[in-house]
Length: 345
Image (cartoon, rainbow, N blue to C red; front, top):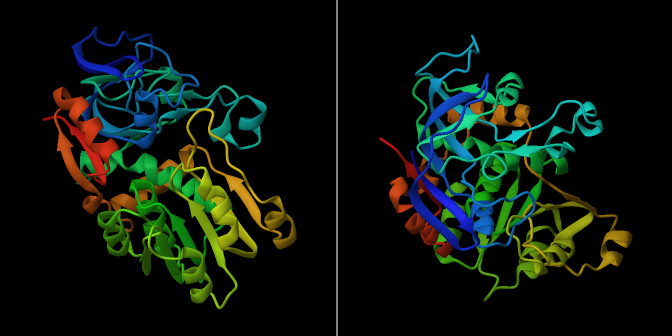
């Protein structure tokens, strides 16, 4: 089969590789659409190394058509499916406590298991039995289905800080993840959404996605604007949606007393953030991380996209054939696009 093979950091080539070897019970899917995530770029550039092996095939946001069911009687060849790429073990202490996204033995499709920047992808039998494979509703496009995974990650983040009706929410960064945060916060009933983003095109995209105010942090005083919009109190919820270390401390200064801050975006390897602990201490700010997703959040996100409650068509701005994988990655990295999709006929 053809695939984009990552041989080392900064070395990804379009090659013919062996078809996936199927163990008993493994499912084989023909990839129809796979979207590029910031994590893919971080792995490609060597800024994320944990669990990464070489060579490997990236790509964890995808949808496709079943070619081999692996003998699982509740699936049929030709069915359209999407896959939750985080595979929990189901028996570790974290899984027993319902924390499967931070499973102690978590296996990730997209580097630990070869991913979707390929013609075909193998889904291990354990993932099929664990119900990581979801059938797609009729009429849902492959590309929209590929965006279920990032929306589920955003849902995980917002559930942790409890974005709800009447909240004033600040989102730092209006890349694909920031835009999904805006869309979900609006759906959750946020009263006012303020976005900070230096890229003019993405500021406009955030307004189109439902933000009330989009500011350029390079020329405008974000703190002053947030205080003005909140009667001097600060935001109820602040979401750091881009991995810039300085923003972690900035977020603290934007939150009200007992406000909540989500450090949603991961940093690159070895990057550290300096934070004013007194802001957390005296203002009783709740600060939390957010990693990955679980299967229930994947299912909820699939339903929201399929029902049109979260509109994602407008985010799919660029499409490439698999053979142009390097151009697709470069486009996603430059920020010219909102979301880049690798599509197959």
